[in-house]
Amino acid sequence: MTGKELYYIAEAHFNGKLAGDGPFTKKCHGWLESQTCTRKALLTHSCTAALEMAALLLDLKPRDEVIMPSYTFVSTANAFVLRGATPVFVDIRADTLNIDESKIEAAITPRTRAIAVVHYAGVGCEMDTILQIARRYGLKVIEDAAQGVMARYKGRALGAIGDIGTYSFHETKNVISGEGGALLVNDGAFVDRSEIIREKGTDRSQFFRGAVDKYTWQDYGSSYLPGELIAAFLWAQMEEADRITSQRLEIWERYHAAFAAKEASGHLRRPVVPAECKHNAHMYYVLLPDEQTRNCVMDRLKHDGINAIFHYIPLHSSPAGQRYGRVGGDLTVTDSVASRILRLPLWLGLSSAQCDRVIDRVHAALE
Ligand SMILES: *Cc1c(COP(=O)(O)O)cnc(C)c1O
Image 1: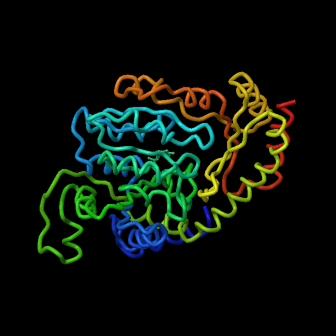
Image 2: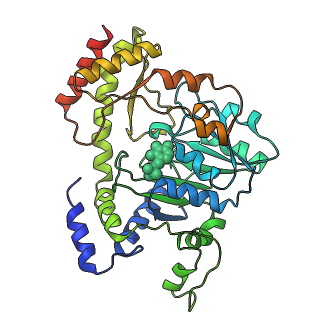
Image 3: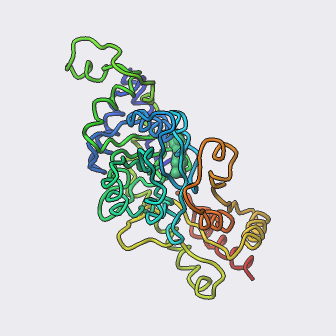
């Protein structure tokens, strides 16, 4: 926590409004809209819920296809699978671990409807190229920017570059509310329907603005809005988002400087952040030379009481990924990275001494 979370929760209680879209939710929406320049920001229960809303907005039909990386969290794929669509997995770039934009075109078929990109570790995908491909083939671009709050690509906020973006405020992310998320509606054509889908398929939001004199069932939808207690907690975090980001960046830079020599000697590879990307220090990872070394270092750190962990089991090799998706090209980089990645502890409040101890133990494990 950053300090005022419980104070704002008490304030929400005294406001006497605990359902969604009260004063704290409005503050959060305003912050997101000014921070990202999106047309419309809407809080949701989670990034997963926001991705489901994105899939509903696209009106996907069974057997439609959505191109995405295999190296991602399950929610990127699940949202579209719930609509009956097929995820088509393409490989990632060896440098940023983001979707390899040069592999997208070969995976496009007459059934392709959208490209869902994931900004891994808060480092932006090559969005200009991806948007050009999407435009050429008439596809929508969904940004899973779960890890991308406060990060930018060529000056633009991650999540506000494609047609629709999604954020996560899960406690493992940078700005948090326990569970939580947001939908960023960048394409103006989706604005009205996104409010309706979020409010159980009704025009309740327009009713509260006085735009209609009663509200009724207009479209399909569900309940995607969080209550005010969550928004109150989140508002305290948003107020401190600059400080959260700069403290995380300090830890990230400390790791990065400490491992420069080990990278030069070929013992590991550090994260790559392209010049056009301003990242948010969501994650610090290293890539070890092979799976055996990775597992060995991970075990040594565990023995030293340090929780360093690997990351995604690629979706194309998971049971549901094989049942519901298909591969679009070979996934060599994905398989290699998944077997060699090691994520180091990075959280707000990790002290310099703790960080140095992790660095020291990684060095020792590599000897
Ligand atoms: C965390 C995460 C999600 C899920 O976020 P929730 O808010 O927990 O639903 C989805 N995609 C990616 C890439 C994530 O990192």
